[in-house]
View 1 (cartoon, rainbow, N blue to C red):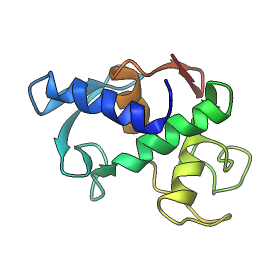
View 2 (view 1 turned 45 degrees about the vertical axis):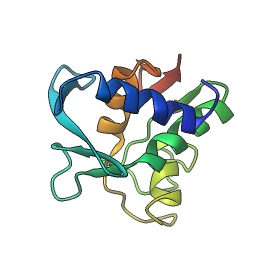
View 3 (view 1 turned 90 degrees about the vertical axis):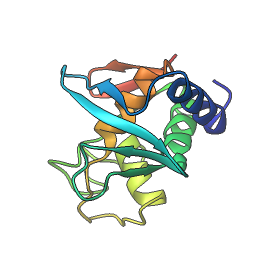
Length: 135
């Protein structure tokens, strides 16, 4: 994978080659529905914040590349931004800080599950315990 923009092109092609909306499996076997929309992807498993703009996928892949092809997912359910379980160099932490403007010590809305699942579904990454690995 060259960069995050290349990853977005791969995701768009995958959506375009499937009927929309697409049912995407989560790591633990559940599924959610995702639909290609203007500027990103709308998912049905993020309550009142269902929109994932393209830059979350670009940033996730660029972070993976910068970290030698792997990065921690980050745990927004149990930690605040900057704590051990949600560092700024985790996918969740990096996206929360850069895209959503969250600062160290703040709570973060958990988005990493559908982001990771879409990256895996598109053939860009694979799961590892608490991490994503670039293919």
